[in-house]
Length: 114
Image (cartoon, rainbow, N blue to C red; front, top):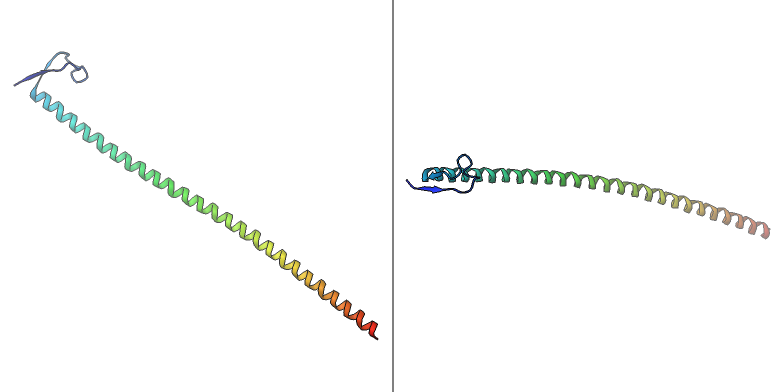
């Protein structure tokens, strides 16, 4: 059994300067690899959760924008309908004024002719 001296106190905190056997080093390496795997899995889960959160936020934002645009469009349609109605009423008023003026002119012309 070979022994390796660890000078890094992070890995050998309990007994600085202690020699670790090959089995202990292999166990430490296995534990490190296992921990790396756990951290990768956590990172993958976190990324998936963030993607879902961002996806939901984008969906909500899109719905909000669509609703706002729909409300603006409805308001514009109402304003345009009111404008068209006012134009129709003005046209009818002009037409009836023209009709009255024509009748008045015809009456005057007929009375002059008699």
